[in-house]
Amino acid sequence: MSNDYLEFIASIKKKTGIDLSLYKEAQMKRRLTSLYEKKGYQDFNDFFKGIMADEKLYYEFLDRMTINVSEFYRNAKRWEVLQEKILPQLLSQNKRLKIWSAACSTGEEPYTIAMVLSNIKSLSDISILATDIDENAIARAKVGTYPDRSLQEVPDLIKKKYFTKEGIFNKIDDSVKKTVTFKKQNLLADSFEQNFDLIVCRNVLIYFTEEAKNTLYQKFSSALRPGGILFVGSTEQIFNPNSYGLETEDTFFYRKL
Image (cartoon, rainbow, N blue to C red; front, top):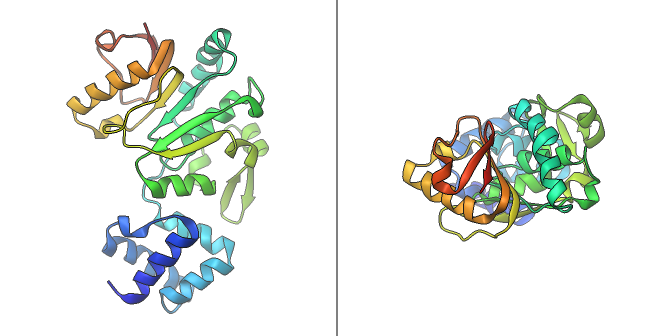
């Protein structure tokens, strides 16, 4: 590993909390070198100074290094069901909901939950736990800037209300950011908090083995209060919800018995 890249990694970690050494070096170095050459920088030292002096370049660097691309309001129809059916039911039982976005990646999902809930109650009354195993994804989530492609499904009114255009990026409003607490967590190894009204874990379990999925469904079910809801992704239908103490509430929504 060249010295200037090593120094660059150390400087970026100190400045942003993002640890580039967790990524495959050859791949990441290639991505970043092509960006700095395109921008007219000579080496990584120069490039780091540029990033620190130019916010637009900093966001472009973040976009280039992000491998896991997620979206706001992914599968928008399901979020409509959440807003119109599931949340009113949950709020009729409990005015202040305990909500967890599990495997939250770069933050699109927990921020979507907050924006959907903001149609029903004030943002100041909303608090969401968001966890992921990837510290870099969490660091990106806390920055809260996203490329246009992440916002394709966001309703226009919500976009106008909660996003500000900054060059080629969209910055999410601080009022939304304040509703979410991010923590590092390994879903398989770590214990879960209890008594959640709503757990959202979407488009993640497809990467796990059947055995791991079984373990996680059991853990999620135990972490829900009776009557609480588990919301999964559109490739992750649970075919035997009863074996986890759950019943189907709607497509991709499961209620704890």
